[in-house]
Image: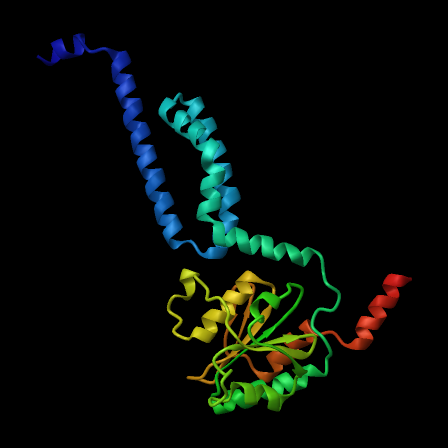
Length: 272
């Protein structure tokens, strides 16, 4: 019985069925891996993964042609035509952030402002931390943040007392963020976008998620005082650093702000 089966077996058909089974298995594994990867991947990692995804498609297409896996070759060729549209849809939030960050290649002159704002910020943060007064302070760098402060613009001197007053629990603006531009308060009660990064899904505080969100969308630096623990945190480029001391903040703010003398010297060197 088995000898007759082997005698009438068409080896060409057998190789076709084996190759088809291999192709189906490969496609199943690739699709499963892709879905699992997209489920775990962070928002920042998606942007980096675009180039890797395109490179893998090219390598897979070349390998499929080499081994004559016609179904995979056809699938990859068909995917190339609308892959750009799929990537735009899937990575729309990250692409928006990428285009927003392009403004950083064209600096707008001053970055932070006067160094005299640093001790005022330090005194306010340390005081609110000791009293467990929740606060969210966003320092503008190169990316313009006018779109976030259209509802509550301000233009007042930055002092420790003014910051503390804005975040006092009975203040009507204490739930929002304070925006600092060139060493002055440019907005208060500002509503910021919350991060969608799955790495921070366990964060219960809205202030921390908003700080991460604005640091993902722009190059701004966000400082947070926790109302529950009093810890001071920093959000920068989508990363959150907790438990900052006064010395840590002094170093960080010294890098963000620029003194008038340093700005004048830099301008003189440019003119020379």
